[in-house]
Image (cartoon, rainbow, N blue to C red; front, side, top):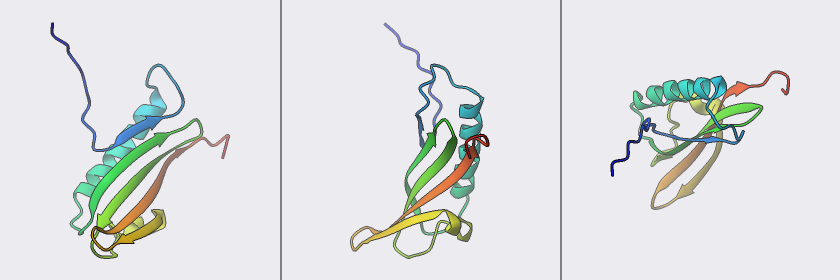
Length: 110
């Protein structure tokens, strides 16, 4: 018995809370934007390591949440300062920064 699976490799998790049975234009647009953001982060040469990234898609908005780890207080890039939502510090693992990047918003519910 052979099983074929078509999996798109992403460097983040997608969590769509809308409960749709099929992906729609909102899903594909959010994934496309998240892909571009993550590609841009991969090109940066800062000392941060992306520990975890999740794309949340809800009925009124989509946002990419990134957890980055660093042994200094530098951000992934200075442009991410406005997206920084929290920083914690551990003596063994360094700084953990949480960035929330808004991507799509439903204008009728904004």
